[in-house]
Length: 311
Image (tube, rainbow, N blue to C red; front, side):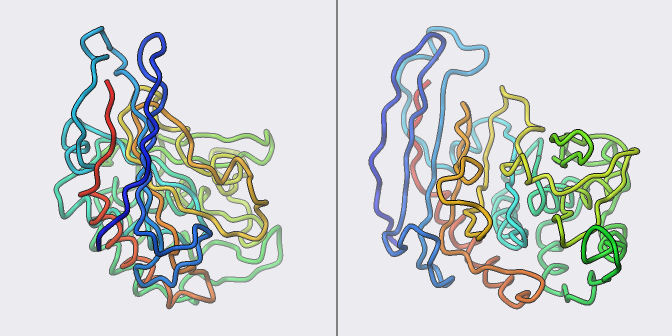
């Protein structure tokens, strides 16, 4: 697949570094509205924001050569952030398998909802390929447990799935630092969970309102982290080099132009947006493997694309 190189918007010098530089890449076959056919014809965008490093001196402010995304990731340790997006964990898993195949392993991860599921499972020691196999075997009856309450599903079956799937029980036992965003119902704010038991934290971050009952954890009722932190990045320190997979939402309840749908701007971040991903859900699980393969192909292509760097 030969991509079309978009226009690079050069950074403007400001005290301590550069304003964001943006590069968008696409194959030109999508319509820009997420209406690809799921067979590799949607757009793939790589957006990079790079300012000076936290310890920047004048020598870091001279122009630097362009690197591919693969080279950028290999250059220094990096974190991975994954957004919410309903059953978008299939696409997140597709991206992670490519990083794993390439030996590009993050030192830190974070996410909301679907992003929390994949980030948490990988950080706990589950390989991306094993997670793929588990997701491909998933059936609705595995997590479908209707019960009266503040949501359709009790969530007990989902919790049992997590307990059986995760190789470790606590955040402290994970092979990489991980944080998940949740919505605290009582304070109406985002909380970042990064210690204690892992399974209930992931479950809470995936607790879509109305679909699931709220999860009580650490004495608080919690819901889906994507309610207020759709990118799932509140658990990543601001001075961290970050690769971020942003799920483009076509959810009918999110109004067009909503800030929650935009790719966040953040110094030191390279973001991947894959348009045209097949949508999955509890009644469309059969499309999950297609979304996985679509994301996997797009990520492989993205690694070879150039991102603009300015120190």
